[in-house]
Image 1 (cartoon, one colour):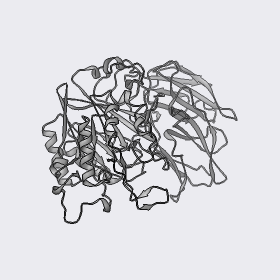
Image 2 (tube, helix red, strand yellow):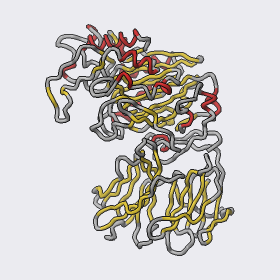
Image 3 (cartoon, one colour):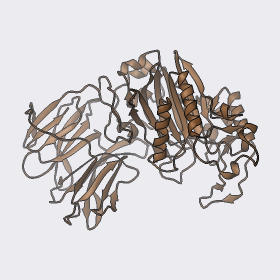
Amino acid sequence: MGGAIREIAPRPEFLHARRRISGLILLCVLVLSGCQGVEPLAAYPWFYQREAASALADEATLTVIAVGDILLGRDVSQPERAFAASAAWLSRADLTMGNLECALTDTPITPTVTLSHSLPAPIRLYAPTQAAAWLKKAGFDLLGLANNHSLDAGQAGLRQTAERLQAEGLAVVGAGATPEQALTAYTFTHNGVRLAILSVNAIPIPPDNALPAGQTAQDGWDIARWERGVMLQAVSTARQHADAVIVSIHWGYEYQSQPDPAQTRYAEWLFEAGADVVIGHHPHVVQSPSVINRPDGRSVLAAYSLGNFVFDQGWAEGTGEGLALRLVFDKQGLRAAQSLPVSAGSQPKLLQPSSITPSVEAQAARGAHSTVEYKCEDLTCAQLKAPPELVFSGGIFQSGAADLDGDGRPEQITLEGGRLQVRQPEGGLAWESPTSWLVVDAALGDPDWDGRPDLVAVFWKADQEGVLRSHPFLIRQNGGRYEEVWGGSAVSEPIWEIEVTDLNSDNLDELVVLAVASEGDRQTLSVWEWHGWGFSQEWRSIPGDYENLRTAPGGWLSAE
């Protein structure tokens, strides 16, 4: 997908609508030094960019890498080696930051109660003080301490944590000897770009970690706690002295893949106060980032939850997946953002870019493109100029209705947040896509020619090596159950969009696909037909710079 990357116009909600494989390997030379031996970050798709890709080579920028929750104790195996697979790329930013979700203490914290999942309750998260050196060696520059576990070793433990980190040359934010100190922004300047970072906790502190009776925060160390007026004033003040502001916030509900209304409301307040990027933690699963175009002309980024980075939560679904963010700032604020999928755990590592990454796929912008129109005869398509009056259908699937079970009443089908759902006419959930799928497009029709409408979905999931791959699936209602009756293996040319339509006017539907070309960073259109056991490709265009698949009965096919 060569060419300049244009600005997207995203919505606050997660946009599972677009995808882009990056052809920006060259940026590894322009932006990053010493790309040998590690995955070049520029190989990952950019999901927001204010200007052309070449602008990233501008020296007047400041880059940040931010990761999710970090625990270097409990059941994390060999925590001293936690960053063995990630240090090489963590250090490739002007500033690298994360949320340290544990106290640093060499005094074991003894639990008194045991929960059903065999974790101590009240849960105490701590790591040896030596972990400060591990974080420094890994490439971290700044750790946020405002979370619901920073006080697990008490106020003395919080102070010790901050002091040990600072002794290793690491900066801390979100904690201090007074509330004012805890809410003081950390400022960092590079290439003339000044960045301010704040950290705040919006999660209740466990009662047994609360301040002793009669003691106030002024009496000892504490974390920055969410108080709307105070917090927004801190952001506003930071904005007056910086070109851009990041707020790291601990919020939301654990193991929920979508932000709750409070998160979106808090984010809006923070943006109004002057924040450019809001980075969330605590859910331990990814809540996908959204770029929001504000009325004042600014583009701001809400990364509701980056999920885990180093953690030991194998018992909960989604906790082994995380995101890292690469952010580029200039004097005008947020310039570019790049989402980097991470295999979280005891030794996190970047998932290799296999054309697309899920969170980026949903919001990625495409570059310069051409318009191509075809007229198909007997599934052989020739490039033509479409009549101006022709109205095309198409676009990324969001919702639809079809009588999938043949009872005369249409079911409601929706695609939102990467999850595909089928609901009964009464509203009950009849089927939904597995949580391991990230569904990027769907289509309704009768591509298998059985006389009843079916559902075709395109989704991404990780293989055994953790590489994300594209798959098509046909879902059919059969005897009261929804069955994945035909499932394509991982396709060599990742699918971006699909449509089901009768292209050749034979009263039988075909599957039309817009996919990445095997030749590289271009795309192809293709037509597929059912042959009893599955689909076979009947026609394929030459590679081009296409997007926005559109089809219409009678053989009209367009990508522009």
